[in-house]
Length: 416
Image 1 (spheres, rainbow, N blue to C red):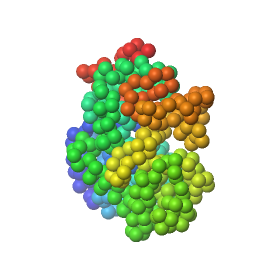
Image 2: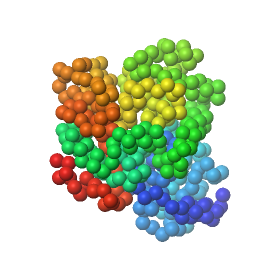
Image 3: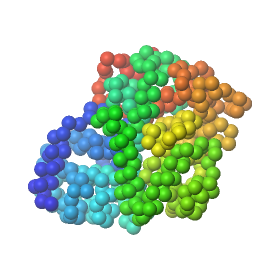
Image 4: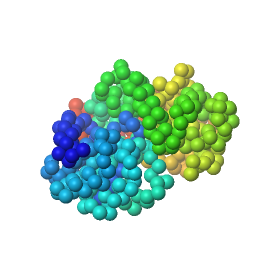
């Protein structure tokens, strides 16, 4: 495709309206890096993040170019070389996993051209196992699904600063009391459970699950199948495995039963776990995946976010839903491990048990630094913490410093 035509499409991209709110990753990215990669599951907002990053880069319009790798038929390096020869400074490539020999093309752009490159790709990309070493050339970032706090900002224009885990543990009662002055936590948390994990809810809430199901099919049929050379009939087996995982309680995970029910060997099942984890469709607690082999049996497996249960589960397990939410929100800036007593050990220090509002301390009552994260409560007491409050752990950039509600950044005394 001629450069002129690429610029025409790029100009159309930059002329489109862009969401005001920026994702939590926006301000964490090192702008000084020559090459930046944004990896993540389809639908989480990678393209919008690319647009925000491009808008943040100060240069003339003819110095930056956006291309989508699924709409070009020539080598990326050749495009980049021609763009650079006309004085180009910033090249943005969306869905780079759809380009041929993308790793080699990225290396050549880095080695031979004076260009800043920002690209997005599937979370399932085998970057670390590529024949071309990109580790010293590219800074890799992973974009996750929306936190509850991001959902509140996008859906209701409620902007709150993020919390550290220690903030929640030491001061959750005051924090929750003040937050509930601005919104109804349980009402809005239910909406998040229904359609809050992906930003495309802004395009229509009624069709949200249909869109999510389409995205799941594309991830499996296109990305997983292509990247891992999985035949179509085996993709159906992987899809069946997701339904089986959805129906299983985390406490009843039986690898042999899953293998038998899926109709595959134990080793093949481990490979499928690896593919699904790389594609950000499941989260594994316990076990150690390396080179597509499971070195230790996983203790618990969850769908990656709480909305996936809506399209994969005919009978949703409330325990799995709660624990999946906790894992998805806490994992970003903290480490989680399986706990033989309770549910999770966070940062090798804090023990958590997840449950409904009537859950008690009987299992973990004598353990230091132990906490209950409870669903269906607005405000906690002592070591009983509302589950929804853990949705405030993602770091987030405010597009507006103030709105009709007071935000925590300018009113910290209210939370002390």
